[in-house]
Amino acid sequence: MRSRVWRRTLAAVCVIGLTIVTVCSCGSKEAVGPEKMMDAFYRLLIYQDTDPIAKLGVDQDEAKETLSDYRKAMTSAIQKQFKAAGISISQSQSEEIVNEINGALKKLDYDVIVKEESGKKASVQIVSESIPYQDIFKDASDKTIRELEPRHIEKLSDAKDLLVANVKEGFHNAKPSSGKHKKTFELKKKKVKSGKNTLLVFFPVDAREMGSQLMNLAIGKS
Image (cartoon, rainbow, N blue to C red; front, side, top):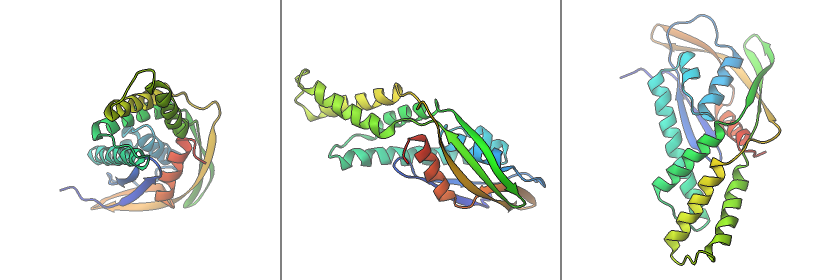
């Protein structure tokens, strides 16, 4: 069994629930800089790309396990979102929506800017495009209502299928925002030990809040 030396929770409201990142590494005396660390976190959470964070010392298998947990949480959150609106969709339908959301998020352009770095502390700004997450669901709902009567749909299951299809289409066709929004994060240098190995990283002071704010930034929620 691999030694798990560090567990931090990254929570993204509205979409993902909880994501756990476990860090372990080969020995290193030089700290992973704040720009590289925040870039890796953005690509993990928003792009679902494990390569950057794995290159910093995170075990690739554990990074993939993180994404698996992330996707399960997203799938569950989407089902709950529909249920709150009085509609029950299947897990497979929710997974299909999650796939389209992920595809839309991968289109976003972003920048990582180190605003300040002094000793063991750093301030890093993420400047990112976003997708109109809430508007896509609302537009899909309005479109479904308009389409129901002309199609003479009477079965609830057919209406739900139409709604899911419209939500998927909305995210598939989603375009990044014309402008970018920004968030600033405070990081602190930390030393992590795993047996004889050591990894120095600039890690967000509040990992849970960081996860939430990154996702809010990507879905256009202020």
